[in-house]
Length: 222
Ligand code: DX5
Ligand code: ZN
Image 1 (cartoon, protein in one colour):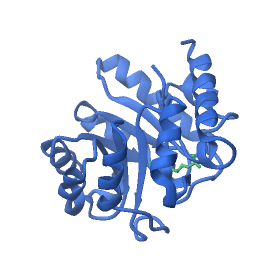
Image 2 (cartoon, rainbow, N blue to C red; image 1 turned 90 degrees about the vertical axis):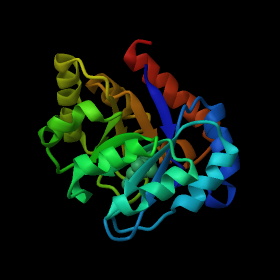
Image 3 (cartoon, rainbow, N blue to C red; image 1 turned 180 degrees about the horizontal axis):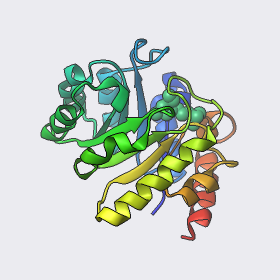
Image 4 (cartoon, rainbow, N blue to C red; image 1 turned 180 degrees about the vertical axis):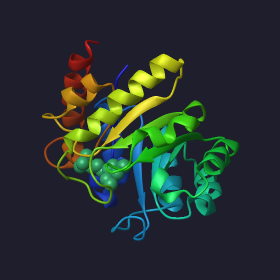
């Protein structure tokens, strides 16, 4: 089943409750929350206090994508704030296995994220312990960037490995997912589809979400 995860990075931060409600009306089934620290990526966004506020205005899972250094230090605070899924970058974790266990031990669903330049076979050993693998289809840091096509090979690779090994992790894509790219990501094997600019960039967010989801379902044959 394909799912749409609207990314609030492109929402109006002064009207997050309104924008999250629109995303939900449009069929979004989790809210993607981009956490940036100005070190791991060249941008700063939000942290646990905003997650805590979002938790009060939606019942949807909050999919927190940590683009930060030293994620271990902040995992308890995200749990306390009400985060549901927490993903950390392979590139930011010196002890990835330990970090994923820390996330799970706080009652959250652990995920691992790969930048476009990082090979997917580096995470083979930890696949049984993750709820999702997030393949970045742009370099992280900003919304509204251009989709990088070769990243889809990693989506296909992971979908094959999952089937061969009987694993259950979900495959998520993030960056440049829009009307012109969504069919390709779904056909490659992705099912959790993050979209920021394509939902909140212009026009009606609920309608944008609904038409993206429709295109994704069509491509998936659902
Ligand atoms: C980028 C973030 C994305 C971002 C995607 O670093 O991780 O979640 O919101 O934005 P779009 O869909 O606009 O490319
Ligand atoms: Zn993201």
